[in-house]
Structures are given as C-alpha cells and as structure tokens.
Image (cartoon, rainbow, N blue to C red; front, side):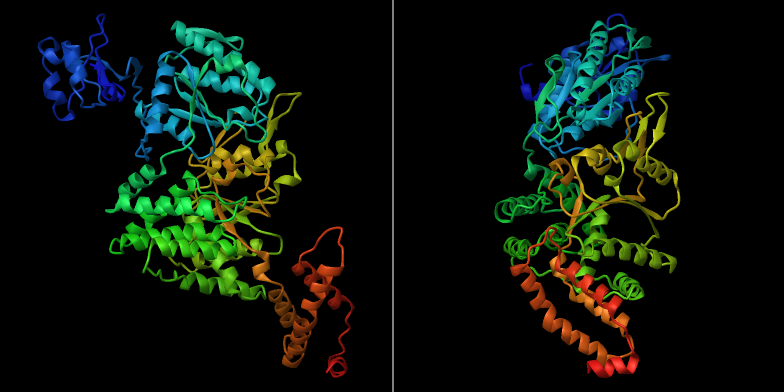
Length: 629
C-alpha cells in the first residue's frame, strides 16, 4: 500500500487479544453481528491483514470474538497504532478538519506512538487546545484541560500528573509557559520519568516518592503562545520530550463553509466567501484598537449566531440572516468612525439589501421604566448599547464593557439586569432574574482572588473568586448569575481565567480543583481599555465599546435640573439656557489654557460644577427665583 492519503487517515481496526494478536476487521456496522457469530477462523477477512487495509469502512464497536471474550479496538495512522479507549464523549460538537488539523493530528499521534508528548504552539485562536480535544474524541480518550498559571509549583503539577498516569487520561496543559522557569525545570524531570515508564511498558513506577500504577494510554500535551508577555522559554530537556507543532494560520474559508453547512445553509460556500472577505477588509481598512479581534473565535461566534437565527425562522433569506449576524456581532465593538466604514463595507458585500432595525419592544419598555426609577435620561445611544450587550450575551458567556469612565458602562449592565429581573417577575417568557456578584480584582492580591496554600500548614484556602464560582456552580436555580469584574485588566490575573473564558468553561485552580461554568453563569468585565491584555484574552470575549464622548454631559445636567427643581418649569428652562451658553465655552477655555496634573473628562467637570453649586446655593423659594429672573 503506497497511497499516503489513505494511510494518513485514522483507521479503526479490531484486534482479538490472543497470543497471535491477529488483526481484526473494520466491518460495516449493519452486518457486524451476522459476520462474527460464526467461527472466526472461517472468515478470510479477519485472518488476512491485507484485506483489512483495503477495507475503508470504519467501525467503533468491539466485535464479539467468542462467547466470553471481547477484543479491543485500535486506531492506526501510517505506522502508528494507538488503543481506542471507549470513553463516552456525549453528543458534543466536532472540529472542522483542515489541512492544518491533519498535520497536527499526524504529528501528535506519531508522538504518542513513540511515547512522547505533543506541543502545539502558535498565536491565540488557531485551534491548539481544540485540536488536542478533538483528537481525544476520535480516540475516545478523556482529555483534561488545565489552565497553567505562574502560581503553580512542582507539587501541584505532580499531583495532576499522578492522576493522569493512573487513570490513563490525556492532560492538555494550556499556556504551559506561564509557569515559572524554575518550576518548569522540575516539571521536565517529572514528564521525563513518566515517558520513560511508558516507553518501558512497566505496570508501575516510582513517582514523587511513591509507587503508582502506570496506564499505557496516558498522554501529555502542552500548548503555548510564544512571545506573549509573561511567557518563559522551555528548557532544552523538555523540548526534547515534546514534539512541536506550529499552528499559525487556520483556513478560515473552509472552516466558515463547513460550519455554515452544518447550521443548515444551502449556499454555504458563497456565504463563507463573503464572510471571510469582510473580515479581511476589516483588518485592512479599520483602525487598530486594543479591543478589536478578527480571529477564529470571533468568526465562530458570528456563524453560531447565524445558525440560531436560521433555526428561529427558516423562511428568511440566507443573505439576510448572515448580514444580520455580521452586523449584530461586530457593530458593538467599533468606535464611531469605524462604525460608519463597517456599514459601508457590509453594504458593498450585500448590495440592495436593507436590514430592518431589531425590535425589543418588551425589553425597551422595561429598560425605560428602570431608568425612570433612577431619574436618569433615556439617550438612544445608551439604550442601543444595552440591546447590543443583551445580544452579545446570547452567543458568548464572557463579555467586556470597554470605554472611558463616566461613559455609562455600569448603567448598562445594572439597568439590563434590573430590567430582565423585572420581566422575569412578570412572567414574560425568555427572561430570567439576574443575581450579580461584583469583584474588584486589582484591589486584592492574586492569592486572595483564586486561593493559595498556607506555606506553614500546606492547607488550601479558597479565594474570593473560587468561592463565588463554587457557590454559583452548585446553585441549581434557573436565575442568571453574573460575575462582574470591575477594574483594569492585565495579564497578571486574567490569564488564569483563559480556560473559563473559552469553550472549556472550567476554572482550574492550582490545587487541582476544576469548577465548571454552568449555563446560567456569565462573566462580565467592566474596564477602561485592554492595552496590557494579551491577544489570547481579547479573542475570548465579546466586546461592547461605550464611548463616553457620545453620551455627553447634557444627560447629567438635565437629570440634575429636573431633580433639583421638579415643579418649576421657568427655573428649569433658566438653568438649561445657562448651561448651554456657558459650559461649552468654559470647557473649551480649560482645554486650551489650563494645565491639569490629572486630566479630567468634561463629564467629571460638569458633575463637580453641579455638586459644588448645590452645596453653596441657598434656595429661598420666591426671593431666590425673583433675583435670578
């Protein structure tokens, strides 16, 4: 057999576990029982390995060789052979297989066959972890994804290794090079002892001072983002144990086409080409902002939303569905200038197609009621941001509200939470009450956030975030639980949440605890910018940009006037005229002629003016009004 394309495929065979280890067949599942209830020696296909190689059908079921004995299923690729583990995977999604995926799988299976580890490395959003997980699904292995952090020591990593080796599971250590270099050196020796035991095919071996059983199906994989901030270089002895796979540029066009076809689009190829073309144009023509991301995760979120819209109404034209998904998923993150250019690009790709404005009649009414309770104004800009945040939460469990202070970020999530809770109490379908947990991560130490070991007693103490996560994860009530992080985002604390923010949805702690993010839980980040966040963080979250300039200061002065002089229309108009006449001139003068040690926004200056005026102004009903007028 010399056909490389055939040999490089994953081929599933059945082997009878006897002394001869005769190679079994890969039969069609429709005639497994009838072809194997008779004596196996009478079946020429089972006893002739060449017939097996030429048979291209795949069978995942073990064949009943005799009345009391089962064989085992093996998976072959080229000259490599691994055992099929029969681990139940559930009805979950699968990865789109591209040429890059094929090369990665070929390298990883060969590494496993040679009793080595795998090391997919590359930028964020190229499918490193997902490829390892999908390969585990192909071989029915249980894949444990561990998000590494600089707080891990060799003991915590060693406990994870011990569990993997004894259970025969695969361990995928995400962002492995975030671990400190002095710890990685010791971990390299641990990995070396495990791989030596697998090579020697021993039943047990000594590991960290104790003898543990060795399961030959164990696999160790590490994924890395080389060149990112806070990353270390792997030592040479560890590089020799792990087979590297460079994963740089995934085939977006093929991935988009397959996902759209799986979502039920008839014109999947045409729609995929338009989508990828739009993304390439956005990269070229839009401005460069820290919170912009046009990678694979963003594309996948758009395509998933398109599938949801198609299932809601199958009569809508496919172009309209895709255009709406592209608009609703990308528009929230753009600044004002880029928003206009994006609408032009969208119009060029979908000519003569006008999208209707999305209707949120019930939600809009509830939002306006909540704003009235707080004596806030109802600017259309802020209400639209609430709708965008609501839509983004439908497709992503992790979202970020980005913008300068006093732009309305807190008002957006608080008002939306109160509005949905109010609708849920009224019994409106599709809305659940919301419970929020607000954390300021930069106000506490990293150990206080995630938890740490007591160095004297070696007892584990949970942090604030891990405690909240556990309580929310164990809560079976249907209400939504929003965990909100208010404050600057940097790589020191948020990188440890990468496994929660992506599709794994699991918070991994350095003591080995794995806390799942349930369907009723959401992560919300409120921050000014993402200047010091890594691309891995930016690509994992949905972005809603809230421009403080667009909100303006007049919304505040209007609310201040109405609350200070509720029943006097003449006085209200007087103050409106005063603000309109003098405040813009004063702000302009300050900008041109004044120097500030700490620059304050116009909104802050106007609020200070109103606060100071309220404090020193003594109202004398009629006399005060007569003097002013």
